[in-house]
Length: 432
Image (cartoon, rainbow, N blue to C red):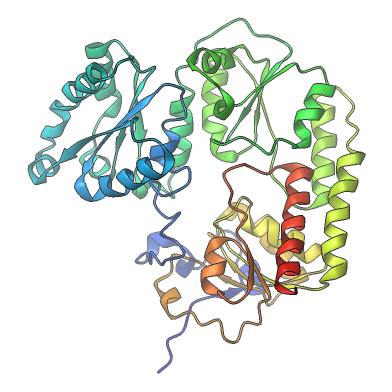
């Protein structure tokens, strides 16, 4: 008997409403299926900028991973591939540690050994702990304070708690707060701005850089571009923070509370009219004028070039990509394309997009990557021409794929333009 894969059509999900999301779409309600499509991003310690690598965003910092051997193995691979080998250290836990928590008495000594082994003292030591300590209820703030007193260098917690992924403070939200927590109050400079949210730089041709400079901003800080610890600390001089990833809201709130630096949040969007409207609101908030016509025209040209060459292309959209899965799906529908399938995590916040998707494409199928039923997925009847995201590529290996998951981060018109340029290039290559 053929096994059925769970999915729900957009129209049916919209009718359920944000307060009645089916249990099948909630990973907390069933076993989690770590398919090949999800292994690369499911865990907060995964490839790309998972918690462990993100914890090293502070220039000159090192990291001590306190974990069972199984949690440390993929870190070894990460450190070798990413050039982080000299910045990762390990305190492995045995069975007795896991049962009794005796490893907590070893951490301060281990931190001192790490610091003493280095030719130059690090700017900070990040202690990365796993779900074991979440279950033990470890007070990492106390542990880090004890270690700080022992070595005279800031020691900060870095929580790799997969168990909290769907909680109030998920791992990638917590680590963003940690990496900005060393900033100390300084005199603010009116022409300095911080871009918060990502651990890799944005595209060099992102229009927001030019927009800010045209408004009189002389220095734009990003933690990923800080060359040393002093440059990182100078982020405390910013007049305001621009939050470009919602996972950085908690960090921005903490900075405002401690350093009195206010923040403005901008959303990564792929609907060109929404991008334009957001810049209008941004300009109004700052009391400036923004001339974004050039960037709008460039993005529109890229959209038209792809759409005219490949009208009504049928897509499957994953969630392992630099976009909000549902917002991107809605954008493609509005540009005249088809979205046959979406693989995404459904939360109440997504219903602003889901309701509009349901109006334009009521039969779009919505799956969750983490559902155990996905092991029975069969793409033979889906008629998908193109996929975006490495997870969507796994489910449709014969479709044309654009991973759209590079470390350099897209935003605004620039991101939209580059996406459609890559879509066209990928389809052109197939048709050569």
